[in-house]
Length: 244
Ligand code: HPA
Figure 1: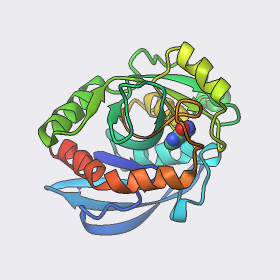
Figure 2 (figure 1 turned 135 degrees about the horizontal axis):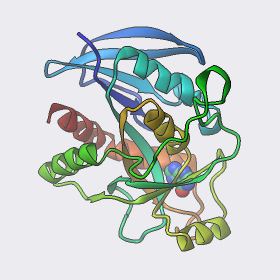
Figure 3 (figure 1 turned 180 degrees about the horizontal axis):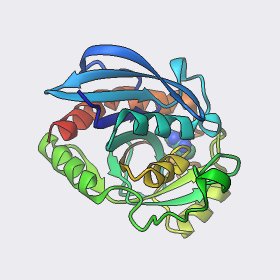
């Protein structure tokens, strides 16, 4: 059975345990080998890729985004559901809420962000008017509504380089620019998926108000704890969306 759907599990989502018949696969790409799992869910074959590798060992700026997306393309994947832990700049998007981003702002610095580097690949300027698949966002909104989750269909995801969190001054600037969410991974992942003409959707889980908005200092532990509290909802949501 060909694999049409993939989940990219971000921080706190390491476990595809709702899938059955799970097997490990290694996919070779021009950008490196990618280990992932493939299983079944309601008659559909689904790939699960852990963005940060085994034991959260790869920091956001060193994730091999090109290999990951190329591997999913190689498998025949058409639709990608990508989870992300994010901070919020928007008081309406509180910890525990889900946001399906519809736009991004890119503040990354050192990443391989395109498949098209001239030479054999050529020069291609990809349209990103709708970077995140509007149809899949609708599917997620329907699933989230059915579960009674707090969700927002649309939001501007600011991608920072990390791995450090932001300064309060940076957060103030990003808020002025219109950002709603801040995280470290959506760019270049979404852009590479667009370059490969795959339908990509972001499932952001707000874990905290961003630096300077939150009254307390931010820790990775706090992010993991909020993700753990909501991991079950996140998994249910992804699976429901896949089944729709
Ligand atoms: N900033 C950047 N990335 C994050 C945050 C944050 O506040 N929370 C979770 N991921």
